[in-house]
Image: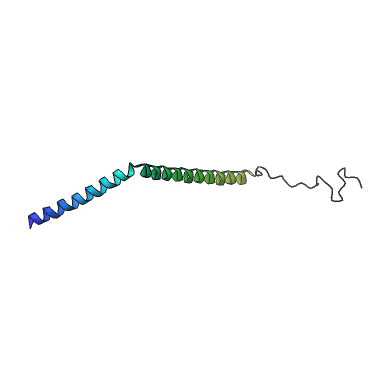
Length: 92
């Protein structure tokens, strides 16, 4: 009974070692390295997008809290810059 237990344990360890060795060898091939680098690139892009989204949300929150107008948006005034009748000087 003890011999069969050790045989099964040894066979399991051997299968595990072979599969890990095969994965390591595949990772060191040009295709494996290319896959790993593309995975890192995707991770970097996702991280950059998350940081940009967080910064944008925080900026919006701070602008709302301080009562500031977002960049690129003009404040509404009571007097239009160009009169409705189309006369740029505002003469009637």
